[in-house]
Amino acid sequence: MQHLPATRSDMKILFVCMGNICRSPVVEAVVRTRLHMAGLAIEVASAGTEDYHVGESADRRAIASARVRGYDVSAHRARQVSEADFRDFDQLLAMDRVNLRALRASCPADHLGKVELFLRRAGVATPEEVPDPYYGSDADFRTVIDLAEAGAQGLIARLR
Image (tube, rainbow, N blue to C red; front, side, top):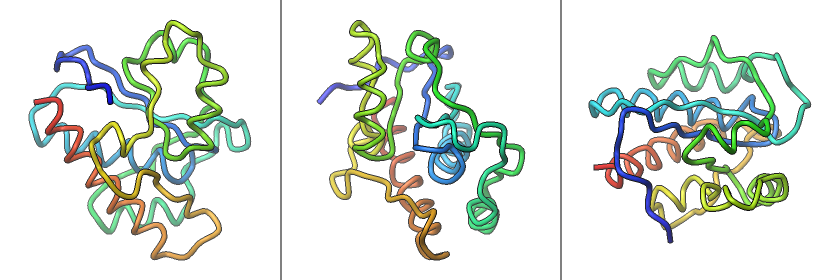
């Protein structure tokens, strides 16, 4: 397993799911908050592998569940992963294997080492994937936040 590069103020991490309205924007908000609390100046963003929701806000259930836990995703607007993202970000971390495959398929060969599963890169042993809550219940959205918090803790530990 690769380790994250040394902490530096210009480090950039992109979190990726399918439509960029549920998992990745929540993970982005959680990790951003936790990095700030840890005093780490690392830029984070999120995007989707598909263009289904480009320009839309995060799913209302994602916004509500995040708000209850103290995270704000209300200003989020979905976007699709771009070719420049592979160059501009130090890590592109997918929420699941489907999106990991999609990222790898579009990734230039010289940037493949940047692409990994979010929870695996964070050192979370199980589960390795953040499940998609889109067709699920409120509990599924809470699970995303739980996993985002565990992943943020793991990333911070590895960055230190």
